Image 1 (tube, rainbow, N blue to C red):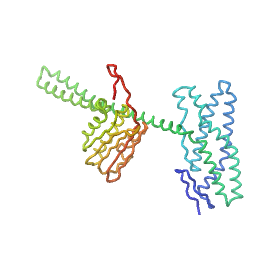
Image 2: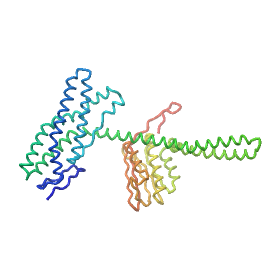
Image 3: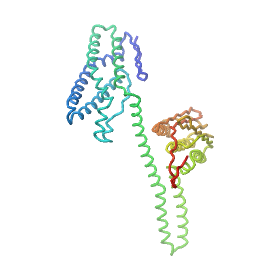
Image 4: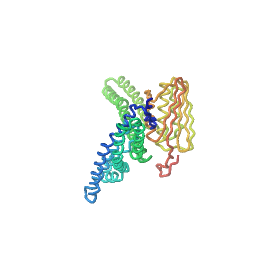
Length: 401
């Protein structure tokens, strides 16, 4: 009989049995490596932390201590990687603190490093590991030559203690640590999305309205030259320029609508979503049941989410009808877009679903896609509800939603 494979996803090791398989050998190798790793970590910790604490009364003491704690973080990262590779334990990486040094200067970095719970727990881990490393190394080595029949059980017992120690001291300190890491990732998504939107606007202006206006100026210049010699040709050119002006104005209106539609600002989601639905190639019914208007940022995200989903319905669904429902539930704004098309939509299918999910996640929202082959397709999006703040209008009076 052999041991069942280790399943890292649920963090539950397989039962130990008499026969040795690759996971048992991994555990044995990890236990034998405990001693050299523990000695290296202990020496570093005693040296760096000892010097930093000893020189704390001097100018260089606290910076050395802060640097030592950052180094202890690196030891913790290495130990998390070793536990992941050899023990099958997945431990989330804590959020970094070094970013604040670049953003806010030396002293905020120094303070955040000295009060960093992750660094101090890594120091504690290094101290505890020395006696544990000696014990686990000695017991495992003796078992290899003396207690071979029960070696799998001993290895499992010691490895489970290793797992518990790594989880307890090397995991993020609390839910706040995990939340900080998520927000840092979401901030990158927001920055990337904003940069992509700016590039799109610049490209649309350059390739659309700007190019058309340049051609219009050239046409008017030629018409001016022909005004005295060939009035009829000049009149035709002016007529053509007039048509170009109308097209350019429409392109600018479309571009402005893509940035932030005036109907959304003036009349809210109900009217704005109805306008989107009227332009969809599939008949769309719209139902908006909101007690008040949400904050402008949330309202804008909801609008563009529905806009992109209806574009997908028009281009990819082969649907005969679709519906949009928007309502508030407690402190969440819920959006549901359904179509009776052929289904089969995927997050990685090239329809922009993954991008929508990232954008919603960046503002603490959710995005759920249900699209079995054959349909129907239902997309449910959630956004945090924030009340619209009253803003002064041009006369100084408060503007209510």
